[in-house]
Structures are given as C-alpha cells and as structure tokens.
Image (cartoon, rainbow, N blue to C red):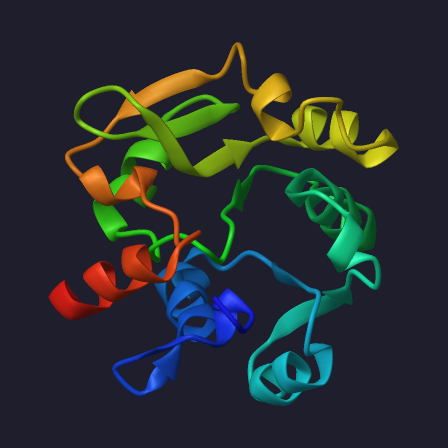
Length: 171
C-alpha cells in the first residue's frame, strides 16, 4: 500500500478513526497497536481516549504478535472485540450479533466465510497473553462460534491497493 493502512483516508478521516468511532459506544478500553510511522499514529490519536502500543518489530512480526502486545498492555477482564485495521470498520448489526454470542465468536459473511471482528473473553485472551499462538488467532478460534451476519464486508481486507480502492469508491 505504501503507507500504514490505518492512515488511509476515507471521507476526511483516517481508517483508524473510522474503526474507533464504530466501537467507541461499547464503553470498553480501546487499544491500538502501531508499527510503521508510530509518531503519526500517536499524533492522530492524541485526542482519542485510546491506549497506544508500539510494535517496534512490526517489519518482522505477524498480526498475532500485535494482538499479544495489546493484550499484555491492557489485559481483558471481560469480553473484548479484536479487529485489524486493514478491514472495513465494523457495522452495528455485526457488533450486536457478536455481543449476543458466547465468546469466542467470529463474524462470518452470509456465505459462512469467517472474517472480522472476533469476540474474545478473558480466558481466551489469557491464552494469547502468555505468547502468540502458533498459527495465529486462527488456531485459537478453531472452536469459536461462527456468527453468520448479513454483512459481506466482514471478510474484506485491504492487502492490495485495488481492494481499498473498490471499498473506498462504494463507501
């Protein structure tokens, strides 16, 4: 992409700010793990009530390593929502469906494909706090409840510029 995905702009705000806005009403701590261009993220988030963690090894680590850092920085005492920044911000109906589920739960598209976000409880989070699981979060979620939603966007990610451009054009 040529830049951290959280800094991508959509309707005058960063993708990261859209993610925060979509979940702030939950009233739970929000943790953001940054990698490249940490100072820019920190400046952007200065006016938000978030716990900022820097993954200094971002260039050689995996997403599960960032999750590990986040959960060690601010351990879950209840349930928590996990969402990577390179996905569309979660929509309220998806949040409602996940909150009704018993964690661990994973949002799925109408066709059953697993996506994001993921809903964990304190016990699941404790498994990750010890060390990032081999195979990442996918391994931890093998027995998770699969919550079928009406939102096909839960399986999108922005690994390629064209994916982002298609999403931004229709949003």
